[in-house]
View 1: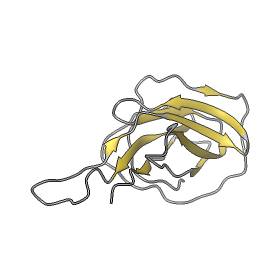
View 2: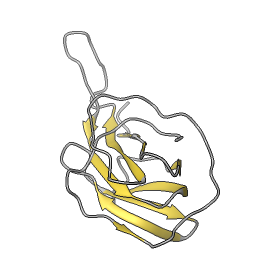
View 3: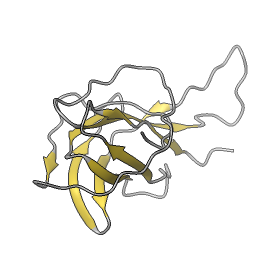
View 4: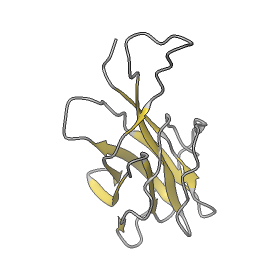
Length: 139
């Protein structure tokens, strides 16, 4: 289970995982989003990274959907980075991880968008989806 926002996935982006990385599980509920990022083979996490709002006022005739964020996504256990990947142009990412508890951190190297850290528990079963919703600062 995960605590997450909304976002997108990285097609074929490289991932780096530390062997045998694991931690005790936590749980929370995933947030559904649009799009269909591909899960990694085996255990791990996948999802999208997006940012909104994209305009100060949204009207029915002028929607302002969140935009995809292409950035580094790290899976951390405390101060240790267990795996890292980069979300693609659609904001999609995926990474293989050993079962355990991780904190996903989006590294944007700028003040905005501000992306929250997302806690995720990778089970011994199929990969879990963790979409990350960032704040553009537009008000």
